Amino acid sequence: MQTVHFTSALKRFFPDIEPQHVEGQTVAEVLDRLETQYPGLKSYLVTENGALRKHINIFVDGDLISDRDTLTDQLGQSQDILIFQALSGG
Amino acid sequence: MNRKLLVATSKGLVVWDRKGQKEWVVRDVHFQGFPVSVIYADTRHQVWWAGVSHRHWGQKLHRSFDEGKTWDEMPVPAYPDKAEWRPGKAAVLKKVWTISSAGPDKPEGLWVGTEPGGLFYSNDYGQSYTLVESLWNMPGRMDPTQWFGAGRDLPFIHSVVVDPADSDHVYIAVSCAGIFETTDGGATWAAKNKGLIAAYLPDPHAEQGHDPHLLLACTSHPNVLWQQNHCGVFRTENGGQHWSDVSDPGGYVHYGFALAVDESDPLSAWVIPAMSDDQRVPPNLALRVCRTRDGGKTWQSLTSGLPGECCFDIVFRHALARQGSCMAFGSTTGNLFFSDNDGDSWTCLSHVLGRVETVTFA
Image 1 (tube, rainbow over the protein chains, first blue to last red):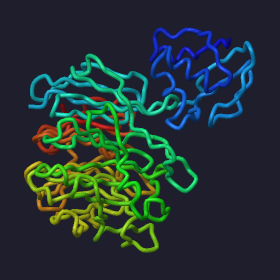
Image 2 (tube, rainbow over the protein chains, first blue to last red):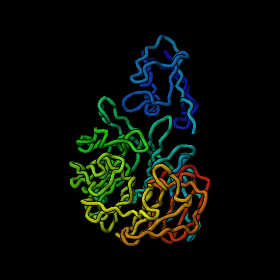
Image 3 (cartoon, each protein chain N blue to C red):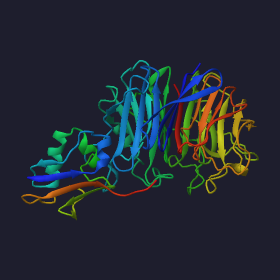
Image 4 (spheres, each protein chain N blue to C red):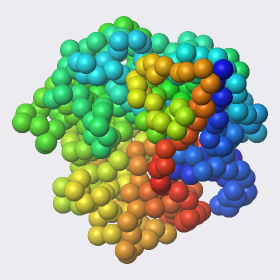
């Protein structure tokens, strides 16, 4: 069971979003589970071909995921996943 | 009389209400803090469409049936699996540049122009979209000398002009590639760039590779089209069979982005010039609107009410609106001007907006 924490910026679009406990062996599977909980969330995080958006970062136990294109990073039994937006100005 | 003015800016959508002949008051701000790149008021259904180009979260589309009281987030066009904008480069939606009615006889039809170089059609009023493969697969689309980005890394479709007498007859404009026409509802396309100049190409008269900044047609004379192009202002009287350069080489009218045309008079048009492509500032640092009443033979500078010195405003391609004799435009430096007399004089409605992307009356 993974624990997923979200950037507070997502509250603007998903007011009810809260940390979630979800099953998943890869980051992609975790996002699929989250999509059922918060329909539309995936489109905020990944492009239509499944790649992580350029200015989104996902950390697993403090480390950036390595596969931003297909999100195949393998997950362990119980890990903390952080979904953040990158810093960009303007 | 127009009642509302919708101004899409880099920091949100600002809606003005008209109070009397000249007074406008801010009614609402929507999508506060977010870059609203597109606003389209669909008169068929009294629906507002807004495109928000989030830096982090990607392109979104929103739709309102109640003049902005409530908004629904809608699906965005998606490129098919394996679609490539260049060999080996996957095509993914970067930005929605334009949303357009497909005509009164297709009430659920919408055209959407996107980056990279996509034209999408929806037959269910934005619930789903299909990439127009006939255009996507045109010879030249993959060729970096014929379709390429201008000011952006990738080519984009920013203008869709539907013939009011025949909704299967549509023109689009691509920066950079040029003008394309379909007469069969999008099944086939033909380049319509004869007479245009692409001064930045080895062959300035190439069939494709042109940079129209905005394409508009005269509603009552749909064979008369105008474009503000990277290399001048061009006009055609024969539906794009041949374009004529109607720039004013001794004056101000040559480079720029914004364009407006008259709905009934095929000889009238307005542009807001910039100095050049290497100095994107107003000529002489003075803001002016230029108007022709004779099909581009002569141009008149309209400056009353506009800043005349130390002015750095550029007006983007969708940021000049016209309805009846009323006009409005917004600039890159956050100014918004209104005229109720065809541009003879202007009133500043705001000088503190974000960068203005799109202006339209509703």
